[in-house]
Image 1: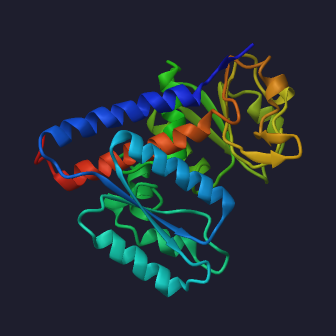
Image 2: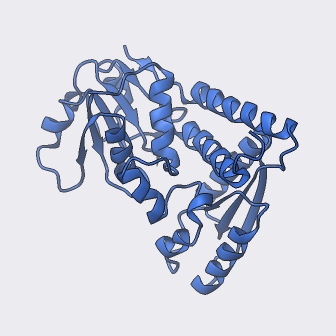
Length: 286
């Protein structure tokens, strides 16, 4: 049976690291670290995510500012809000909660966040830094996954990693980040042929496709590390993209859903917010 990759425990470890760092700055008289979250409309899932982020901020000493806008807002109005919030020197991290309503352009909106405050890691500037291996802001889910693996002492260098899913939020930045960790990375997607023949060779298999129980035990190498990013609501409850009950018998490590990657995404947002805060201080309190 696989060892559970406990995202709840690892996220607590990461948030505690951030809290201790912030405490050191505050003891030296540094101003409070602040994160602004811009949310449009009343998406129930987004409401839950924003609540979790607000709780995490409060617990570790980050000021959380929620700017909730009408679902009927225009693109121009939304962009004005993003620009205004981003110019506030007291706000160190800015994020636009996704998804946005269909009539709004999410790429245009997120691109307006200054790279040094882009705690989601979605701007082309930060994605570009990732390509050349520079230290920008890594997207929160990829960053959380890497932290989770390292937290469980899983060696990354030299491993054959297969990622199923190529989204801008998870698959693509995660592939680049793992290349920077000296992994050999294969990215699969909806057009990939003979998917099982590829996934079954992975030392580390990461799945983010949004299809319940999509990965079955015959698609997984014996003793592979399996990371399930999927969160799918079904009549039986919340399940991941991996058939957990059967793959658990095949893998060496596996993430549960819920309680695996989800908590890590929120924790890594705290880490990125600390990074943005440190950029704004520019060594004044070191």
